[in-house]
Image 1 (cartoon, one colour):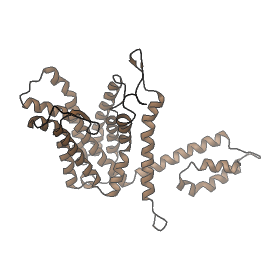
Image 2 (cartoon, rainbow, N blue to C red):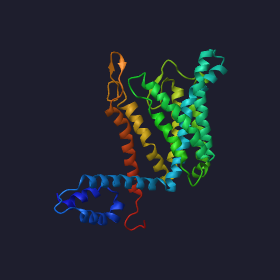
Image 3 (cartoon, rainbow, N blue to C red):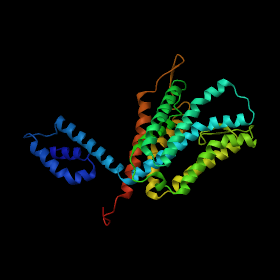
Image 4 (cartoon, rainbow, N blue to C red):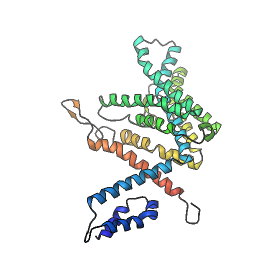
Length: 338
């Protein structure tokens, strides 16, 4: 391989648009600066070129995510994610209140244990309402507390169980303040039609109230519980499972009915959460699989670097792939103006 070819290979690491504009100029400068008889790039040149390629890609990604469509999608994602986290946190406290209303005796210890869930549910509800009114920055600041709680809870569970099954809520919670912190050109109510906001509200009410409705109506058959990964709970009766599925379908309807540009960006933004869920719940997270932690004298060992790399790099890589596919799909053709 000649020096010219080696520099071409290194410059191929830069984004295509960057190469189109600067490649010939950079190549000329590099060859002019090369020593007589030099056959390969110096370590300094390799380091400088690869570092420049990384910076160019980061700038390009920043430019892509700065457009209005991505900012709108981030605000909508923050709202929907906050509602989903509220549903997850509020379901048990609401069921407890329904049981108390139905004259079910509750002990002081049980009531005390429910307080963290009540506070977290209230926090996510405040985040969702703030986002719905277009107060994105305030919602982002509040969401930091909820994200910190989810991370702490994952750390507690990590010390108790051999698999990492409940990592996805922490990933989703961490995305909320980041998404809502972006200043969008329009508030969420302007991005989503009123009927979509109503659909999200209905989905939230149905999902949160599913166990309470099933319990109060007495319609569930408790002798034949349903165990399912996709309803995110186990051992529920048929009525509760149906109500949960209805709630999830309403959430899906609100997302899938959005305009194409917004919908595709929303789906791309949730790729890290979906991939984390697949890794920890459906595939690698089950007993006897790759993400299971080994034990030593009855004590759980930490996840290995390979396991952590899988949990971190695979969602990030597939998110980058999703964004690249979306960008390529929306790139103007040769007959269209850029």
